[in-house]
Each structure stands twice: as structure tokens, then as C-alpha cells.
Image (cartoon, rainbow, N blue to C red; front, side, top):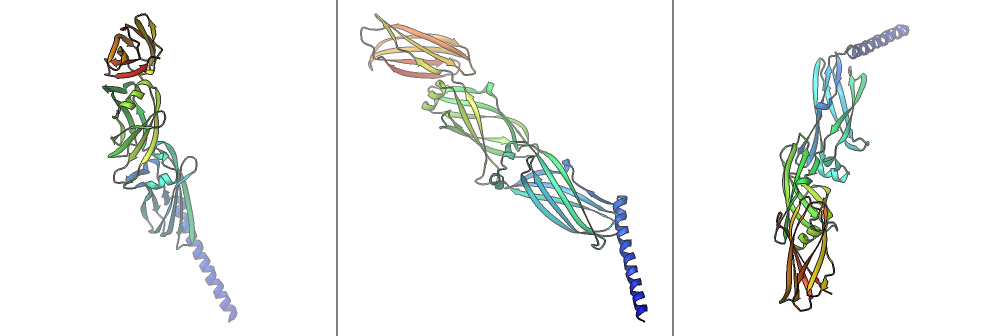
Length: 374
């Protein structure tokens, strides 16, 4: 009797083994014949969108289950890193079941807080191109969870800067003058990622060569592709005099404010080499000979424009006694040095100071300096 029970138990175990073997065989068959397919996203299937304060990665993958059994417990792990391997995104999701003889398309949306960009040192992606590597791992179970399988892939996608090239059209930068006050017109061209829509506000702060704030303005930039525009700056009398007589490297700080995101901006610094029209304007010790006085001066026209100057000198004994005056005209091409002098007769009084005035017929520039006669 016991021997019969043992024989029966062995038969049952053998039958179960055959069943398991059959299940495994039928599980492998669709994989071998291609009835089971894991279709991972291509480069064109990966996109980005900005919604409020989040940058969202959107993609999808497809699982074709052409086999005899349901696929269960599908775990998907996603990691995105830049070309140096720095992790940008790490996320996961689960699909409970994919029915037999069916196709499942799984959408993937991974949000990234824009404020995290700055915290994690990723704000360079706003202004610079990169290559992003997306690594996907998929683990799942098949045939009543008897068989476990996995797959993975790496997808490299070129990241286009949200705000790419910002080019100052230096040849068409123009300065205009209203008396002793200057205005600077700066045309620019900006390229933004093609998938962006709408507009952003860009606050532009301007600093001089010694890093002192000198002017500000805001402009609206249309997103999506290549756009052109201009920013205008205004300067007070002191700042205007420095710009007229001192070539310097200006620092331009851009603060890009996204719509619907409060108290948050991306910042970028650029530099512009400003060429002063009367760079290093210098007067030298006047030469007095008899009843005449000669006032020498020099400068360099570093601006991109030619100058048509009228230069006058008034000599004074005191604030109410004008001893003499004289003038000269000068055509000064851009990028050239100029040295000149004005000789004028004076009344028989000791000259104490003189005023040099320079005006440009082309731009309206007016510059004035008072010098003491030692």
C-alpha cells in the first residue's frame, strides 16, 4: 500500500514537472518567435515641456504581448544623466498586468522642479547644449509569475539649450546723445529651443568696467526659434561722461523670468567691449606766447562710428572775464587716434582756467571739461 502511494506521488510530481516544463516552453516560444516585443522609445519619441514651475520629460514605450499568458508586475526604472554622467532624473513606475495577445503603450511623464535646476547646478541647461543619456530598465514576470525576464536600453538625445545663442549685433550698436545724456541702442539676436512657446521677460542690468551698476531695462523675448530685438539703455550725466571718454568692458547680466513662476529667474552674464568715441581724452599744459595761448589735446575714437567734431576752447581770467575763445573742426574715422590744438589770442590778463567743449554732428554727442591753468 505504501509502495502504491509512493508510486502515485512520483507520478503526480512527474506530471507537475511536465506541466511546468510545458509552461516554460510555451513562455519561451513567443520570446523566441518574436511574439513578445519590447519597443523602447526612439529619439523622436522623447520631448520636453514647461508647465508652471516644472520641466517635464515626456516619452513612451510599448510592450507587445503576443504570448499565451499575461505579463505581470512590470517595473520600469528610468535614469537620465548628462554627458559627464551627472544624474538629472531618476524615477520608476509599475504596470500591474499586460493581457495576453495585446499591446500596451505606456506614457511616461517625469517632472523636474525648475528650482531644483539651480539647487543641483543644472541651470547651465537653460543656456547650453548638451547630450542627455536616458537609461531604461524593465523587469517583469510571465506565465503565472513562474518566468521572470528583463530588458534595458540607452537612448542618447541632443539637448538644445532653452535659450541658446545670444548675439549682440556689434556693428549696429548705436549711441545717441541729448546734450550731456546718452542713450545706447543694442540690437540682438536670440535662438531658443524650437519646442518652446510664448514669451519670457528678460531683465537686463548693465555694469561698467569697475562693476558699478549704470543702467537697466527689460525686454520681452518671443520663444521658439531665432528672433531679433533690441534693448535701449539710458545714462545720467556722470555715466555719459565716462562712456564718452573711457573704453571698457561692460558686464551685462540677464535675468530670465518664466511666465507664471513667481520670484524665480535664470541668470546669465555676458560681456561687451565698449569703444568710447573720445577715449582717454587728454588736455596738456597750455603754451603761452605773448598774447596767444595754445591748448593741445588728444584722444582716440574707439567707437564703431566716424566723428564729425567741432572743438571749442574758452579761456577765462575768472568766472566773469572771458579772455578769448577759438575753435576747430575735425573728421575722425573710427579706430583712429587724433591729436590737435587750438591757438587763440587772449586779453592782457593772466588766464586761470579754460573750458574745452567737443560736439559731434553725427550723434549729437556733447562733452565738456574744465581745466585749471597752472
